[in-house]
Image (cartoon, rainbow, N blue to C red):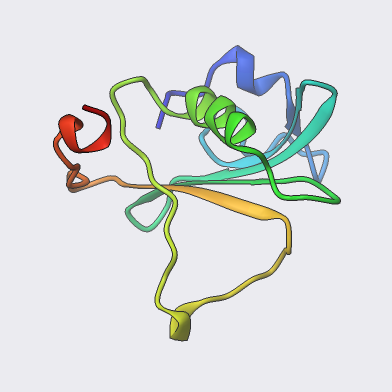
Length: 117
């Protein structure tokens, strides 16, 4: 995950008024995009980089997800969205999507030709 930067910090929500999380990859953010306030929670614990993106009344669009991916991950870091096995599925918010990236192993990727010849 990108090192914390001023672009992201200015959108941080200080939930408890104690400055906790400032300067780290962990926290809550309210990020404007095309007139919408994207609610974002980022964390980098337990071997994973994780960023959730939600809106109040609908799921984020592909463009909104791409925008957040580019804010929180470097251009050379792949990240993915995943559909877990149904037995592991949990849904705490009906309009929330997630980015995931393991910190200690490479994500296998298809040959670019398979994505778009």
